[in-house]
Amino acid sequence: MTARGRFVAAVAVLSALAVAGCSDKSAKATPDAAAMLQSRVDAGDPDGGVASASVSSDFEDTAIPASSGQDLDARMRHLLEAISQNNPDLASDALFPRDAYMLVRDSTDPGKAWEKRVSNGFSRSVARSHKRMKGIERARFVSFDLGRSIVQITPKKKDFKKPLWRVKHSKLTFTIDGKTRHLDIAEMTAWRGAWYVTRLR
Image (cartoon, rainbow, N blue to C red; front, side):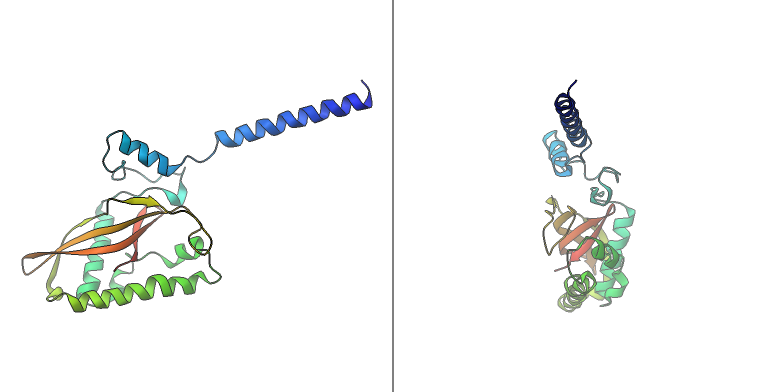
């Protein structure tokens, strides 16, 4: 075979390998979690299997958390306690973690952004809720219902870098002197298989 022939053959082999590599990548691509959720809804599951979904290594920190459970209820009890006592520190486990925010937020100073956007806003909302609800000091937890409109965040600059799950208008139900009351939680965001408050009011 001539030198030119060997050159052409080598190019052909390299091209074939490149195509095979691309095919292999597409075959191993991470499945679209949003599409999977929609397919469950289309199949007749009203919440897309959110209530029964388990943390999957396929999605890592973008796994869809369960919509209920003892851990979530416990943290929402802490949220009610924080509001009833006007002490946001009592619900630190209900707030989106600072360390997680540092990892997923596209910001020159994600720690400062967490303080401003998440922590400080949460503290103000706890104080406002405490002030507005007469008799909140006697509140008794009843239940927590995650909002129905769960969406996947689209990663973008100066926002979240990962397609985490977000839900709005979750409902915390409690009683004050036997009368049923509700608190609408503006926004919750999922992290590592659990839901956390990112905006209370």
